Image (cartoon, rainbow, N blue to C red; front, top):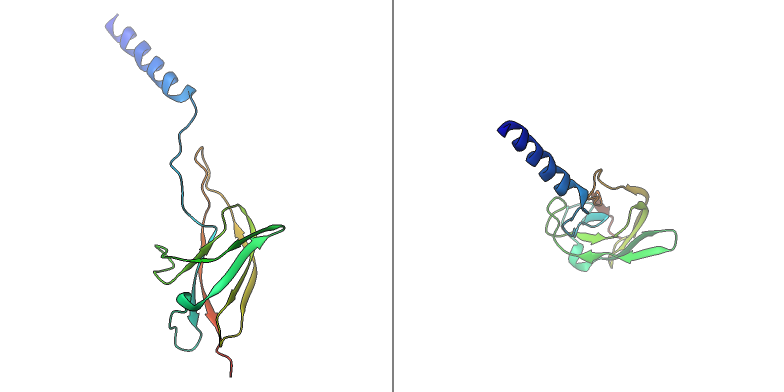
Length: 126
């Protein structure tokens, strides 16, 4: 009899926990994080760079800030799932442009952006 009550209480507890809305922690993960560097020396250029990212009618400016994987000299931007284009400018360098950067969401109840991280190698102008 005691086992039956314990099993019933466990089932009720499980149902009570799973019947309400899922609470997800807020995420600060950007859609893209890139490290702009000089193509020849790999010197970081994030402090000198400006840029935008987006797709369709959605545009976001790239903001300087550290990224755990892209590094401390990074640019970050984008807050939505989508296929992004990225444009970066640094005085004295040819602009860096790329397109087709696909940003998806993690599976599960608390879906978060899967940040696309890479290095943007900018070529110095003659």
